[in-house]
Amino acid sequence: MTPSKSIQLDDFDLAILDQLQVNNRTSLQEIGKSVNLSAAAVQRRVRRMEDARVIQSNAAIVDPASVGRPITIVVEVQIDSEQADLMDSARREFAAAPEVQQCYYVTGAADFILVLTVSTMEEYEQLSRRLFLENPNVKHFNTFVAMNRVKTSLRVPLIPAGKGL
Image 1 (cartoon, one colour):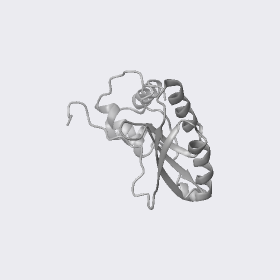
Image 2 (image 1 turned 60 degrees about the horizontal axis):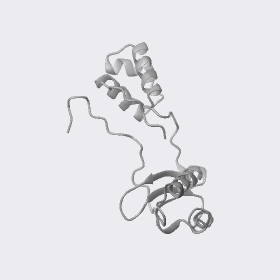
Image 3 (image 1 turned 90 degrees about the vertical axis):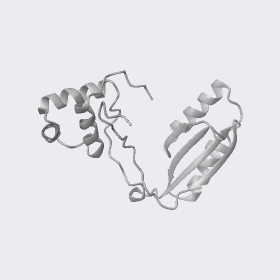
Image 4 (image 1 turned 30 degrees about the horizontal axis):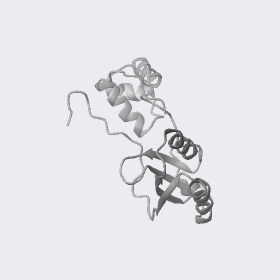
């Protein structure tokens, strides 16, 4: 993931981002009305935030069960060797797997936390064989099968400038 360019975000930008996180199909006119800016000013700000990679994507959120992928699995992965090229290889392999929705390189007992979605446990068995069992640099992995998706979101809480914690 490319890091975002450093830009200053003001209260208008944060208000625009907050609305786009709820529904990125909200019209520029509607956003402008709610934040007291013209649609053209909102459009310029959105473009600036896209160019700086503050807004990284505009995507539909799909219910996995609705498309035949009802099983969500969280996996902790411990790597055997933290040699840079081997860690980079693991990152690339995890990121390339379409079943991996999210992958985090973390501190603590595990090296990576992965969030996966699969159609069946048989699919997960094949995936775990490919990603973990056949990878000589994977030392150990723990699997957690979600019984219920209580909350799933990528929404970032936004605090207006000058109103920090």
